[in-house]
Amino acid sequence: MLGRVLLSIPQGLLQGASYGAIALGLSVIFGVSRVTNFSHGALLMVSAYLYYELFTRFGLDPYLSIVVVAPIMFAVGYAIQKALVTPILQREKGTTQDPTSLLLITLGLGYAIQNLFTMMYGSNYKTLNSKASESYFTVGDGLFVTQWSKVIACIVSFLLAGALWYIINRTELGKKIRAVSQNRDAAALCGINVYHVYGIAFGLGVAAVSVAGASLAQYYFIQPDIGTVFATKSFMIVVLGGLGSIPGALISGIIFGLIEVVGAQFVTSSSAQMFSFLLFIIVLFIRPAGLFGRKK
Image (cartoon, rainbow, N blue to C red; front, side):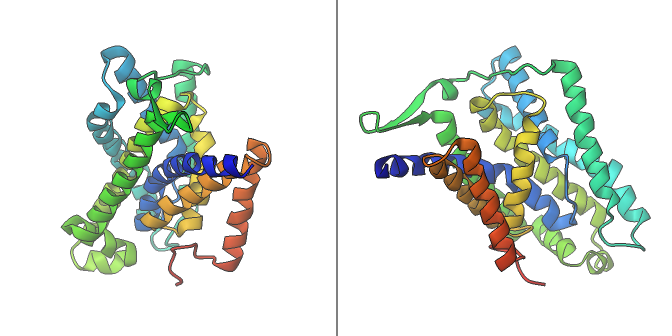
């Protein structure tokens, strides 16, 4: 039993890193604009289908497709912010800082996207059989075996987190993003176009989840409901790590992955997810701001 548990740890790290990568975009959006994007899972699904189409129609490797898909999804995120989110923020600015109607707008958008893709592709599962998904990373004489796509996904997760951290903490754009996230009214008085910064942050968040989708599409089935599978877990990871914390999202994702994979050695896989929910509840009781969140 001990040997099985030890061998499951690397698999849990790989799975958890993928969870963290998916949650990073959600953390960026909430950290800047305080908008809870309930269409996050649907946008992940859209990116997965884009990678699938580019691979099946043009033979373009999913990792190379990132240079095509990420800018497209950035533009989609920016457009969503400008067309749907900004008008509500402007309309309700005098009544509340974080309008509840935004939750309904993004939730409705998520369902609309999901149903649109169901009409286009049906509900059948699709698989993206790339070189990375069909080759295996092996340690020892078959002691540990996993798909290369999962190993690359882990590497991409850390690179993505590092890139987002650098943009927010070491660039001129990052200064504006931090200023707006701290006090948007004061930032506006300093000459910063608040809603433009919101659009960029939303675009970055959607582009980030599309990068995570490049790896996900290679080892997980592609189907219109795929976003639902990861959306709830992403929200839990973001809250557990601390709303708006990039390191918190990645580390919490790894924690979730470890708990689920190691827990599956003692109970069924579906039952093991209960441990993640239990940890989530315990942490919120002890530290409501999350593991890396700041108390206000």
